[in-house]
Length: 510
Image (tube, rainbow, N blue to C red; front, side, top):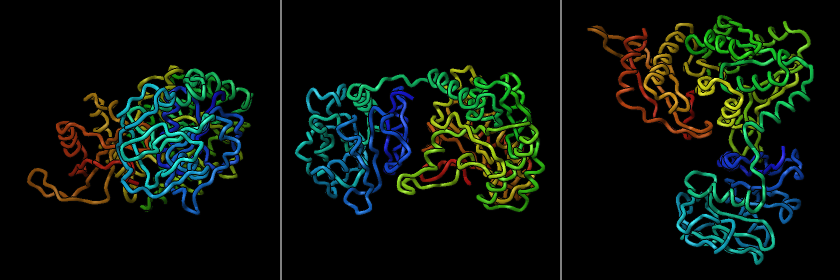
């Protein structure tokens, strides 16, 4: 990949946002832990140092080797990255006397400074640090301040090296994208050639070379990622791609049949396997979330392996792994970004499968996957589908799983999702679904007392699922949906709406 930008991760919660914003500029970038030995600096035209929860004054602070970067490539330090450079090249960093979190405004910008081109004094930026740069080294030049932070931005004389103590990647920094563009395009002279069409062209050519005449098997889920991955690989090797769609019994209502029907019109080589009874039998009595995930993952691999053996001489397994999955499975300091739960499609395969892995989307964020799919002509309705967890209703039914509970939740979910579509709300929501709680509550139907299940409706808005906020759905819609569920789904007598954001909550309940 040409014209790459390297982002060195020191554990900031915002590191992925830096990458997303760089990609918005049609510039390809990659994230690596600051101490990674797996990249070649010669492949990059500019480097960005991320923020960090660490203090540069701490003995345990991350210490990157910048000997092949500083003064040789355009370099931008963000927050910790800026403080690290100031601290290690002759300046002074200390604990801040004033609160340096949240919104601030630029009170000083050096005149005719390319870094701040088209950015005005008063522009809002986002601070998030407890340390601050007290004194800049002699070779550093002050180029920007806020009312509370004098050394908010600097550059090193006679170098294309810059540092800022605010976060341009977050949307609260109103001119953040402009600042990143000034650095990458105007200063570093990185070309803006990263587009969906260029990705498809390059990836298909790479897949042809890598796979040759080999056979590849792929587990389709009906979701965006696996569909786009299948289409890319199919463009490269045609009928040598064998797709398997497994019904684990935990899919949405009529999902198995509907998805197979959709794939018929896409020219993909797809086989549907209904293993729902096998999954439900294995899950009997298991109520622990991780236990359920492991059972679902194990049985899927067993079913998938059985089907793969029906195809002669398969050498590759294709997966729809996307970039957030990869990043969250690697850490800068053994874990700067805490692991919340393991990703079902990251980390390889059991030894008995003996297949090599190909992951054509593992450099893309979710919205980029959709744009790539659009460039290949994939149906907009399929590309617009909300994400659905790999374990399906297995992690939306809290507690143990039975066929009756699956039936109940399928009906509830169907009413909710269809209602969003009917009311024109579906495309305004990033992900929506229903959870079945392991509690009963008292209700009244007719003149009789009931003691039945409670369900939770959840709808969030997000860009890539890393952070999410609950959607303020109209009260009239929620009222209508609640009535339909309680009147139409036997076994449910109470509906509630989840108004938790991520963080601190997660999108799914398990």
